[in-house]
Structures are given as structure tokens and as C-alpha cells.
Image (cartoon, rainbow, N blue to C red; front, top):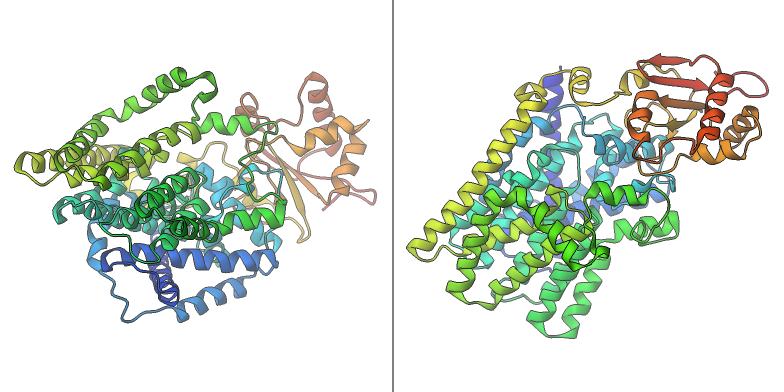
Length: 583
């Protein structure tokens, strides 16, 4: 049965990806946005993703996240898509698909990626249980760009929990096609541009990320497609608007898209030297990024959240993301940047040398602009989060420059070897990581077995064993992963202070804490003791801050009595009410 579910997920996700392309083609045609034939597929995929995300966002704000409504809206959009006379070139997907094949078994497996269980899947799952989008300020990730989450809503509503990962896999294929087109825009011959398209999903910095239910693919595709237009020999009429929309979509997928948007729009202004083009680009960005800032404006009253948040716990997010110490001065920042780039030297150095060869041999302004953008990308990577996968847009630009070097015999060899070495290193990284996760058997392995091998302090057995009333609402303690829980829940992320801490500190005795929880609508408490112990030393997840608070916590557990469910270290407690226990 797992293999059947995997096959169904691939078929439905591929059909959905095709529908997004058709919707994007219709939208592009209505606005008369200029795109060449070899870039239309990735651009239409991005535009279609944006259209569906906006519709799902509006349904969520209206609290209409019901199975029939979400599926009906998706089918209706697909029916309105443009399926004929689109000018698509399907061959541009061949090499990116080949490069992404190693990640496909991961995409077809039961979800196990920690971040996905917390927010890529966890947040849309929570919204489905609540019937729509509601404010959750206790979860930092609930303020993050939601494009991928919005696209996951309909599949999760019908139980296709593998589909979001496969759709993300297709977004990486689109990113590969955009990388190839960017290389062609910079003057690369077709074979070198094809190598760049092949290598993009294989990059060692993002080994197998294409197969995870995440958001990186849309961000990378948006940035590279926008650059392919901005650095083309001639920026077409109304091109600035489309470029702005594309980098806006990247921003609606990942916060890292914001600095990239500034750099790409700067390229537009430098090439056009017209204020109108910049205004169009900014307007396009505001439209493309709307799923992020409109959602936060409506739900939180803060369209820029969480960029300027300084509350307790936020520092652990930037620490985990690998943000480098800019505040300590340029020297410390530069030293840290070099240290973080060092693991990538084996494949980055040949690519950089080939890119330098392109700059010195061809002496075209567009190539130097691309090099400036890549340099800015490295700096932005250090400031916003130096996790390897966040380097991918920069690597895509460097690969395009390396491909553009292939115009003389020595340069062709340099370009081919640089691109091939990046692909080979990425293939080795991917094969090794795939083996660690279970190899090709991931596709046919039951979910429980996959999680047993990959999920730390797995809460799913306790989730499955809980038989809660329909009106139950559970507060999670020490467990940020809410995906799969059967009833409404509140699950603060690992970067957030537990709401229970303030309740315990304000209560004079455990009964008052129970009454306060009941007053906030909670009926149950879920505690993952193993995960709480693992996280409490580095994150603000514990419902206490000192020894006295720890005693209050244990006194509360004593009052709650034996848990209704206890599997491993995961416990589910009913909160007693005045009329009796909450069962």
C-alpha cells in the first residue's frame, strides 16, 4: 500500500503542477506579460502557484477551509487555465527532471522532515482543523512566508500528505529550467546551459532538499527566472512588472527572497535607468509577495512580521539559521563568512574560476551585473542565514556565469569541468544522504517504519492512539510538531516561549493554572517528555524559567493525574473541569 500511495501522490501532484502551469499561462496572457518560449513553463508554474495561493489565502481569511471548497476552487482554476496555444517548450524540463531524480524517493516517502512537521505541513494542518487561517502569535513560523503552506492545504484536506513534497520537487524542476534559461540569457551555448539546468537540483548545498515538503524550490525558481529576464540582452516592455512579481513570489515562499528582490530590482533600474521601470518592479513585488504580508497584516496587524520581532526566543532562530555576526564588525563577519563557505570550496572554486573566465574573456556589462548579484547573494546569505541550502540562488547565478564562459576551446573545457564537478559532488552527497534515510525503500516503507528511523522522539504513535472529543483543544508542551494530530491544537515552535509558563507563574496553586487553561479554551495538555528534555537546554520551550517554576510544573502534572494516553515519552492529559474530568 505505501507504494500505491506514493504512485498516486506522484500522479496527482504532477497533474496539479500541470494545472498550475495552465493557470499561470492564462494569467500571463490576461496581463500580456512578455516571456520567451523557453522560460514560459517555469514562469507559468510560478504564476499559477501564486494565483492558487492567493485564492486559498482568501478562503482561509474567510474561514472557508473545507475539503469541498478547497478542492472545488482548485478544480475550477484548472478548468480556467490555458491549455492550448501556450508556446510551452516541454524539452526544457528534461535535464532538470534528470537532475532531480535522486530526490524523488524522498518526495514519495511519508513525511518525516522536522521543519515540515512543525510548519510546512503542521501549520496548514492546524488551519484545516480550525476551518481557516487564524492568528497564532505563539508560533514564530506562523508569521513566515506561507506560499508552500497555502499550496499544501487542498492536498492535506483529502489525505494526500505526500503530495506537497512532490509538488515541491516539481518546483525544483522549474528552478532548474530557470537556471538554464539564465545561462542562455548570459550567452551560454545550449549544451552548457543544459548542464546548469541539470546541476541545479543536484547542488551539494541542497542535497535532496528538492524531495522534502518545503518552500526553497519556489524561492530559487522565482529569483532565477526574474534574473533570466532582467539580464536578457533586452528587457522586454512590461518586463519590470513581471520581474517584480517573480521576486515577490520568491519572497512569499522564503524570507531570503527579500534581499534577493532588492538586488534584482536594482539590476532592473541599472539596466533601464527609468523611474517607471523601478516603480513597476516594486509594484510587481508587492503583488507577488502579497500572500505573506497580507496574511500577516490581517491576522497579526504587522505586515512585516517576523522581520522586526525581538521577543524572547527569536535569537535562537537566527542562531539555528546560521546568521553571521555582522554586529561584531566587518572583520568578524568576513572571517565567519569564509569559514562557512569553506565546506563548499570543492565545487564552488571551479565554478567561480569558470565564472571569472567568462567575465574576463567576454567583458559584457550584463555578466558583471550577474557577478555583482552573486556577490551580494553571498553577503545576504551570511546575514540572513548561512544554512547550506540558502546558498542555492547564489550558486545558480554562479553556474549560469560558468556556463557563459564556454566560447573558446579552453573555456569550454573549463566550463564543462566546473559544472560536471558540481553535479558529481552533488550526486555523491545525495546518494550518501539517501542511503542514510533508507534509500529507494523509502517509497514502499510504511510511515511508522520511516518515522522510527528518521523522527526523533516521535509523537505520531500517541497522536494515533488519542480518542478526543470533537470539541477538544490541546496545548502542546515540548512538542513543536503538530502535523497529524486529530483535533484542534496549539503548538508553539521550538523558538517560542511556552504560553504555559506565564500561566504557571501567575497561578497561586495548580487549580488556578487549570482554570486559566480552561478559560483559554483548552481541554487537554500534550507533553513530549523526551523532546522537552532535548530542546529545553537550547530553546525556550520549557514551561518554567527557574527551580520554583519547575516545581509549579510538577505540581500541575500531579493534579492532572494519570495521562489518558502515554506512549514512550508522550503523554496526553485531560484538564479537569468543575463538573468533572474532560473526557
